[in-house]
Length: 483
Picture 1: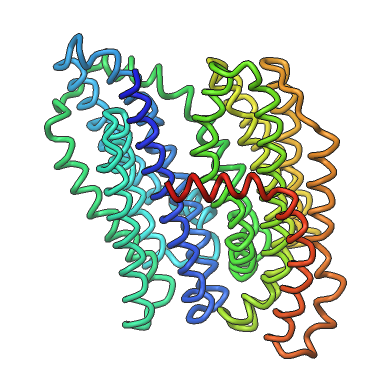
Picture 2: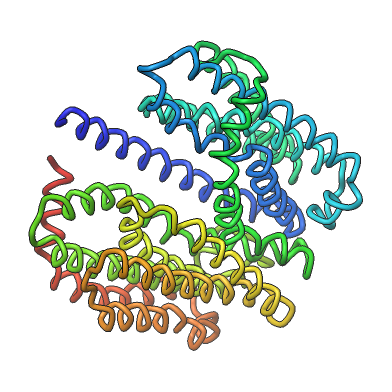
C-alpha cells in the first residue's frame, strides 16, 4: 500500500511539473508573437488553436477516457481481450478521423468556413486539419501510458511534442520570417512526430481489428463523457471563436494576449492543486480534524491567488510595453478580469475534490450548465463590449459555475468554509486588481522603470504585512522544499 502511495505521489509530481513547464513554454512564446506578428496573424493562431481543440475532442470520441477502466478490468484477467479493445479503439479513431476530415473538406462552406471565419483555407486551415487528424491517436496513447502508470514516458512524450512545436515556431518565425503559418506548421510537424511515436509505442498494446461488439461496448462507455469534454472546452475556449465571428481576428489576438497573462494564476493553481488533491483525500480519510485543516489551507491558498492576481494586473501594462508592439498594449485591461476568474476557479479546485469521492456523475451536468452560461454571456457581452465583454463573461461564468458546484458539493460532503472571509478576500482582491484603471493613464508620463518601481513599492507595502502574518506557513513550505 505504501509503495502504491509513493508511486502516486511521484506521478503527481511528474505530471504537475510537465504541465507547468508546457504552459510556461507557451507563455514564453508571447514576446515572439507580439513582437513579430500583427494582431491579425496572432488572431489566426489563436482561433485555429481553439478550433483544433474543439474538433479533436469530437474526432477522439472520448475513447481515451475508457483506457484506465478497461486496463484495470482486463490486464490480469484477459490481456489478449484488452489488446483487442485498444486495437478496436485505435482503428475506430483512425477511420473516424479520416471520415471527419473528408466530410469537413466536402462541406467546407457550411462548417470550416464558419469555424475558420476570416482565415484562408490554404495554408492555415489545411495545416490545422493535419493536426486535427493526427492528435487523437497521440492523446489515446497518452491515456494508455497513464493507465499503466508510466508517468515518465507520458510526460516525456508531452515534452517532445511541445519542444518540437515551440522550437520550430521560433525557427520558422525568427529564422524564416514566417507568420501564423509558421506556428501552425510547427504544430503539424510536432503532431506528426508524436503520432508516429504513438503508433510505434502502441504496437505491443493493441491487436488491430474491427469488432462490432467491442466498438459498441467502448462507445457505450465513452460517448457519455463527450458532452462533458466539449463543455469543458466551451467554458475555456469558445470565446475566441465567438470573438472572431462577432468581431475580428485582431480582437481575438488582443483577448488571447491578455488572457495568457491573466492565466498565470491558473498555471500556479494547477500546480498547487496537483499537491493539494492527494493531501485533501488523505485528510478526509485519516485526520479527525480534517475539516478545520482544509478550511485553514483553503484560506491561505485563495489569499495567495489573490496576491498573484493583483501583482500581474498591476504590472501587465509595463510587461506588454516590454514584450509587444503598441497595438497589443491595451490587452492589459482584461487581465484583472481573467486573473480574478482564475482566482475563483482556484477556489473551485479546492472543494471540487469532493466530487471524486465517488460522486463524479454530477460533474458532466455541472460542466454543461457552465458551458451554456458562458456561451450565453458571450453572446450578450461581446457585441456590446468586445474583448472586455468576453473577459466579463469569463469572470461571471467562473463565478456562477463555482457557486452552483459549491452548493452541490456541500450537500454531498459538508465542509465549514469561511465564506464571508473568502468572498471578502476575493472581492477586495478584484477591486485592487482593477485599480490600475484609475491611475494607469496618469503614470504614462513617467519613465517605465520609475512606474515599475512605484508599483513595486506599493505592492510590497500591501504584501509584506500579509507575508509576516503567514510567516509560519511560509517557513514550513520553504523547509519542505529544501528537504
